[in-house]
Amino acid sequence: MSLIQDFEQVLETALPRDPSFRRIEKTAIDSCISDARRYASEGLKEAFLFSTMRLLALPDNGHTRLIPNDAISVLPLRFVSIGTAIQLVGTAPETTAPRGKLVAVNGTPLSQIEAASETFLAGTRQRKRVIGSIILVWPYALARLGFSSKDETTEYRVQDENGQISEFEVENGHTVPASTLYPRNEHGRGDPAWTPERLVETKGWRGLGLAILLPSFLDSGEGALPKAISGAAEQVSVCSEKTLLIDIRGNTGGDFLKTMPLIDAISENASRQVVVLVDKFTFSAAIVFVAILKHRLGPRLKLIGEEMGDGLTFFAEGGSLDLPTSGAVVRYSSAFHDWENGTSDETTPAEIARQLVPAGTLDLDWELINEPTAEDAHGAFYQRILRSLRN
Image (tube, rainbow, N blue to C red):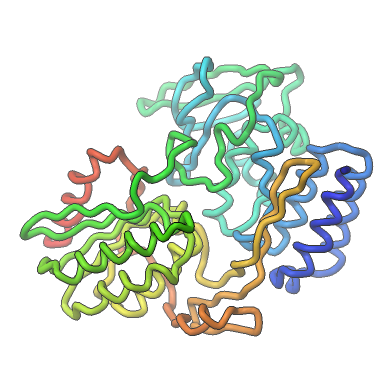
C-alpha cells in the first residue's frame, strides 16, 4: 500500500459522493488535489495529510474533513477551546506544564496562528476552534504554517487565572500519539478518554424544575439510546414542574431521529418553559434537536451558553474512510440539511426530510461561558440557572 492509494480513495469515494463540493470552483479543487498528489507520490505522510486537510476543508462544511488524529504524533499537551480562549488543560503522563490560557507559540501570538490555520480546518468559526487545537501541538503543521522555532523545541506562553505569564519549552522529538490527547470526536473535556457513563441523567427539585443531561446521541447499536430517551420522555411526561432544563453542552451528535420521543414529550406541555444549555461542542444531531424544539416551542425555549459548533444549513450523513497507509480518517457527507428554512433537496434522506422544519435562527438568549463541570457539581449549577429564570 502507498499514500497514492490512500489518495485515490479520497478521489474515488469521498469527493464524488459529497455534494458540498458542488459549490467549490474546479480550479480550487484541482490546485489542492495537485499538492496532495505530489506529496503522496513523494511518500511524505505529514505533508500529504496536511494538504488533504486543505482539500477537504474547501466547502467549509463541518461534517467533511480529514481527521489526522490516528496518523500523527504530537507534543504531550492537551489544549481545549473554552470561550474564545485556548486553555492548556492537561498533559501526557510524565509531562508537567503550567495550566492556563495560551498566549503565544514560539513567540507568535495565538491569533496569528489561528488565522493562518483557518483554511486547513473545516466548518464554522466555532467548529474550527473545536478541532483546531491539535495544530498547536503538531510540529510539522507549525513548521508548514511558518511558526516553528529555530531549534528543536517548541516554546509556549500561557497565562494563569491571576494574569501570571509562564513560558516553557517542549522538545519536538518528545511526542505521543495524537489520539491519546485529542479524540477523533472532540468533546472538550479535560480527560481526552472521557465517555458518558449514561446517555441520560436527570435531577429534579420540587418547586424549581427538572434538569436533563444529554451528553451524547451516539448509540452503541444495542438499543441503549432509544431506551434512555424513552425513560427520559416518560419522566418529562409525568413531571408536574413547569420549568425544564436540558444540558447538551459537549454533545457532538449521533442520531436525532432516536430522540424524537423526548422532543414529543417536551412539546406536549403547552405552558412549560424550557431552557437548553449549549456550547461550541454541541454539534450535528444535537443542533438538530435544538432546532426542532425551537420550532415547536417558540419563545418558550431559551438558549443559554455560547454559539454552537455549526449553523443550521449543512451537509451531513455520508460515512468515513480509513486510509490504511497513513492511518488517517476521512469524513465525508452525502445529504443536505436546511433547518433554518426547512428545505431539502434530492440528497436529503426521506426520513430526515419528513422531520425538517423552519427553525429560523438559534440566537442565544443568554451568553454564558462555562465548561462542563464535574458530575457532583452539576446540581448547584443547574439550580442557579433555574432560579435565574424565576427572576
